[in-house]
Amino acid sequence: MDFARVVKARRMCRGYLERDVTDDQIERIIELASRFPSAGHTQPQEFIVVRDQTVKDQLAKAALDQMFIAQAPVVIVVVSDTRRSAQRYGRRGVDFYSILDGGFASMLVLLSAVDDGLGAAFVAAFDDDAVAEVLGLPRKVRPIGIIPIGYCAEPSGKYRRRPRAEIVHAERWTRS
Image 1 (cartoon, one colour):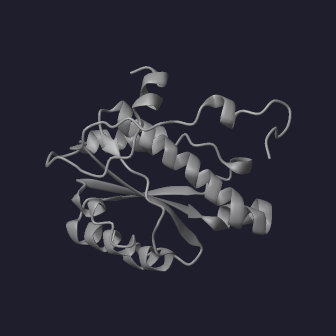
Image 2 (cartoon, one colour):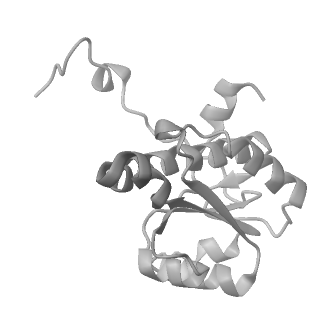
Image 3 (tube, rainbow, N blue to C red):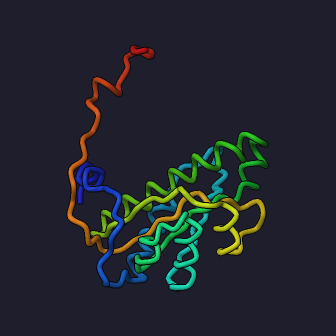
């Protein structure tokens, strides 16, 4: 699939067919997602691949009862080892760069899934401490996003995008 088509096909999928996602597919997604950019090349992102139903159920509960997470055949949780960002950038690395870098890695997971014919959703509404407990994360490793992945069972919907005239500014902010 060409890049423009992948980007335009990306949407949040919250319903999945009972069809497995292969280890090869997940390996390819992780391979592409591991190309994420990071501030100062600190590479704080890591990926936790979850197939165990009990763990998926616990993640769904930790994500404010978003149970569709548990219905996906596989879930990738993007985490940031904030110690890597902190070494170079201190507090800003922990509070900003490691989160932004996690967003980049998460977007690559989403786009790579679409490129492989899969559906995915980015979930950031969760209890950080509960997710950390479920996954056994060390104190300085922070969950950034929970990404359920599978073959999408939902029909593709069209959502209105704001016109470019509303979102693009020339040289400086042009509206109040």
